[in-house]
Each structure stands twice: as C-alpha cells, then as structure tokens.
Image 1 (cartoon, rainbow, N blue to C red):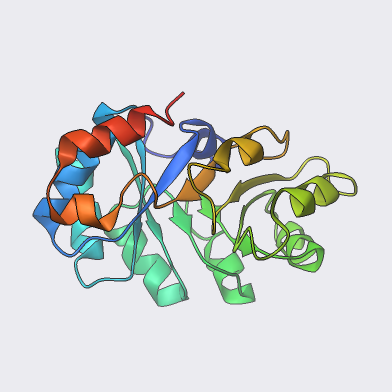
Image 2 (image 1 turned 90 degrees about the vertical axis):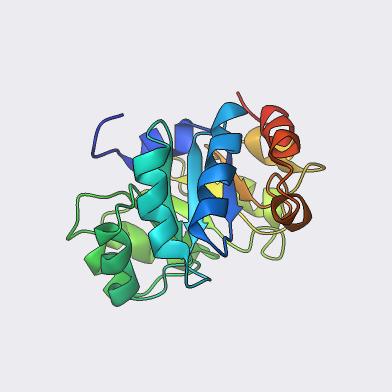
Length: 208
C-alpha cells in the first residue's frame, strides 16, 4: 500500500469498516490479523480507550497489509496524535471548522461526519467530498442518503450507526455509498473470548 492514500482508496478497499474498541495492544494485533484474514483490510481503531494510539502504532508494524486509521477523533489535538501514531486515515463522529482545517494540514485522508445537508455543504466549502454519515439510522438511513444524492450527486458516504448484518447490504446498494461502518463483525464477546477464527468468519461474510 502507498504511504498516503486518498479517501476514495480507503473507502473502496472494503465493504465494511469495522469500528474497533480495544483495551490492549496485543488484543488489537490479534483482532487486526483475524479481520485481514477474513478479507477486511481497513481497521478503524476508535480513540475511546487509553490503548488506542499504541494499538494503531502496533497494527501498522505487525499487520502491514492492513490500512489502519483512527476513529472517534474529536479535536485537533487528537487528530495530530492519531497521525503521529501512524494513522493512515482519520474519522470523526461529527465535524468542526477546526477539524476541517487540520484535516487539510496533513496528507492523511479525513472523513468528517455529517448528519444534514447543511453539514455536507460546510464540508464541501472546506474541500471535502467524502463523508461519514452518522448516526445513520437515527438520521433517516437509506432514505436520507437517497435524498442527498439529488442535490449532491458527486458526494460519497460511509454510513455508520445502527448498521448491522440485517441492513448493511441496503446501504451498499446505494450509488453514493462506498462502504459502511459497524461493530457487528467485531462483537465484544468474541474479542474478549479471543475467538479469532469466528471473527475471521464474520469478516468473510462481508468481504468483497
């Protein structure tokens, strides 16, 4: 993989971006290997735990075939720390002018999260055309994305939030959706029980 990817490359490398919450580095590496083995190479490590940044660095070193990024990035400070840890992409749960600005200061793809047309227009003003749509189901889901495609046919999305095995294909069928995000292929109980083979099978069930 090239050192610097585009948002399009990250979003088209997988159908499903697993939203990963890890408590320790060893667990993260084993989980990353299990997902890659199942054909899911894009790993979004959320900055919800103290181990997240170290986990990103370890995954970059020990699972080189993966595309590793940071999720739940909520501030400029977190953004910079995530890049310094080796993140190949950044995802936030919302967006601020400061995040939109710092996203242009680094050669790392940034997916700001949007919920409304006004959010998208603000992102477009800052030069973005790829977004996370979050929380997807709460904000109209498939119907909302269909509505967005009318006035904004060139914008592409990764919907996340409320998406699972029962509905992810509905989202992927939309022309303005490149991938979806979700945690259903990395269930907490399987991670804690270290059932890596089962996680690999879940990954296989959604991989291209």
